[in-house]
Length: 313
Image 1 (cartoon, rainbow, N blue to C red):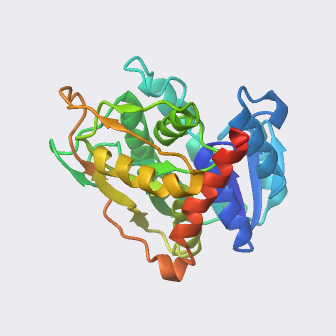
Image 2 (spheres, rainbow, N blue to C red):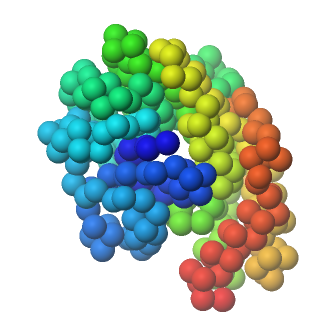
């Protein structure tokens, strides 16, 4: 397929692009800036690697005039994979939900009409398990944050306009991915402490979350992209990884890294007292790793080897 992908410089976007290209698809990907202009090393590295895997187009954002011109210039087109989203201060309670919604769906009616004129009748939209009513869990599945709310509203707007334009819309719901080229998040925090010979303390071990190898997530994404029906409809996939408490996942991660990093990888699981977030939120679709051609042991090796390079050990 000829695929137009947005958001390819993000952690998951880079891995999605990698697997789409490996599957033989022709990918045209939009980037906001050249690799050297991204603010930190993981993003600069990802952007440089991503641009070597696709036809990169720097500048256009979803729905703006340059984006519409791009669609026309690359017609015919088989699929729009819209992964980009407004994530500025996404962890903050001051996150601007309505501004993010506007950016994520800018000029959507005209954009979908332009896509249809370019022969494209399928859209793949990325969602989050932290939206309300996604996955399975506790407290009646509320949105976790204003950011989660913005993703939910984005999907509602896309569903309305895709149905009006008689286009197929598929939604791929992301849980908690981890792996190489990630910004310093939970597993990066653990690794950083281990290389510094300190013991990381985990303050929220009781939360039940769904952590998934980004390489498995990406293979599931590429396969899902290839199975979207051409007829107007709505389909969804919620791929699941290790659905367990954060404490159990921390111990799992340490056990896998210990022999690979040749470090003791100690952890301290504190008694959790703050439950500001829902206690349980997981995805529900178990990937068929054999049919996807994913090797779990190799994925753990890749994480260890990546961080050995980062910390020059």
